[in-house]
Amino acid sequence: MPTHVAIIMDGNGRWARRQSLGRIEGHKQGRKAVETVVDTCREVGISYLTLYAFSTENWHRPVTEVRALMALLQRYLRSERQQMLEKNIRLRAIGDLQRLPAPVRAALEEIMEATRNNTGLTVCLALSYGAREEIVQAARVMALAVRNGQLDPQEITERTFARALWTTDIPDPDFLIRTSGEFRLSNFLLWQSAYAELYVTETLWPDFTRSEFLAALEVYQSRERRFGRTTEQRGLTSDLARVTRS
Ligand code: IPE
Ligand code: IPE
Ligand code: MG
Image 1 (cartoon, rainbow, N blue to C red):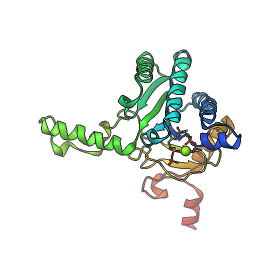
Image 2 (spheres, rainbow, N blue to C red; image 1 turned 180 degrees about the vertical axis):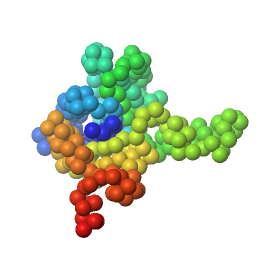
Image 3 (cartoon, rainbow, N blue to C red; image 1 turned 120 degrees about the vertical axis):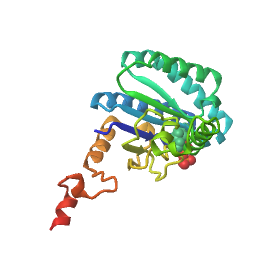
Image 4 (tube, helix red, strand yellow; image 1 turned 30 degrees about the vertical axis):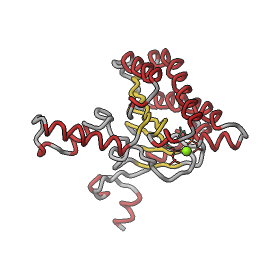
């Protein structure tokens, strides 16, 4: 099982259009898929789930859609709070949270604090998130530390840099899923996904089910992660190894 699964939850708008509904209905429907995925992660023992819910670029959508998404997010947080406590879920968020409407931010911060010491699944919401922005702010943090004499430039390493990212103590994603058939990252976890296994499904986010998620996890298990090494070094007897030897 992957330790950390990250999902680009895409296709709400297209789902709604296919049902001749407004885009907002698609976002509303997407919530069910979130609950399904959260419960399945708990069931199969995944430790971290990161959900791309709103990107930096999504702020450029029509103001009515942005407002509706923020309202849905607030409603989601309010109604899921108790469940998160009962399910021992730890809530985290990554992104430029200062840009979120004050009531959303307040709800988010309150739940993050209340679930801080939970030991079950960590659910990390990427909100107002952009990977390039995350990397730039990390560079800024490091530059300030150097200027203040707290950091020697020699101490800027992959490890210390990663600690300055919003994901600071969250391990890199092992498995990155994108729904709705788009083969791109859309500014999601660019640093952290360096060695993530990628999986794209045509299914639109509101239609993403438990069985489809389990099927995706099975695909993950069939992948050979070499991290730049050879199959022999990994000590695996995969098909590839057999082919290479013969
Ligand atoms: C994903 O669905 C949700 C967000 C980006 C907030 P979309 O709204 O992008 O749906 P499509 O891509 O238009 O179908
Ligand atoms: C990526 O989806 C962001 C989220 C799922 C929150 P988009 O729909 O915004 O991505 P593009 O515009 O198709 O690249
Ligand atoms: Mg989209």
